[in-house]
Amino acid sequence: MESLLYLAVIFAPFLAPCVVVGAAVALVRVHKHRSSLGRLSSVITCALVAVMAAAVSFGAYSWGVMSGFYILDPDEVCATLGAEGDHIVTRWTLPVSAQCVTEDGMGTELVPAWVNPVIFIGLTLFVLALLAGVIAGVRRRPSLR
Image (cartoon, rainbow, N blue to C red; front, side, top):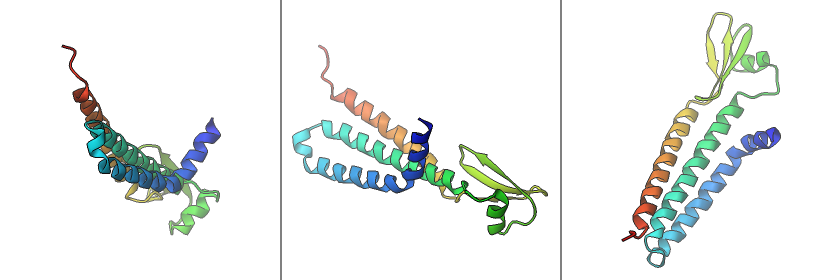
């Protein structure tokens, strides 16, 4: 199970754009046939937006996690970034962070600055799309009178 999760994290930055494009194509097709789908199209639209937001968030998360993962020795990685002296690499899961910290306490961030905002915006959009889909689904149900 652990190796499957590891593979998902490795391949997510490459598969996330494919999922986003696939969901966008499906979204265009739903809107072309909107009249035949009726109100169900709003639920499908929310679900597709949620899938796109989740793919973008997971892709950015895995990009950030893999930014701080190197096969090289941490001192070599930090030296390639221009940080002087001995280093300790610190890692955080969320917000994603991997830093080379020197003896003086100076840190050099290995994760790109855009990763955490994309993760949090994507997660927010995911939750909002799910809520909108549930509300649209509840409104779609006929009343029990």
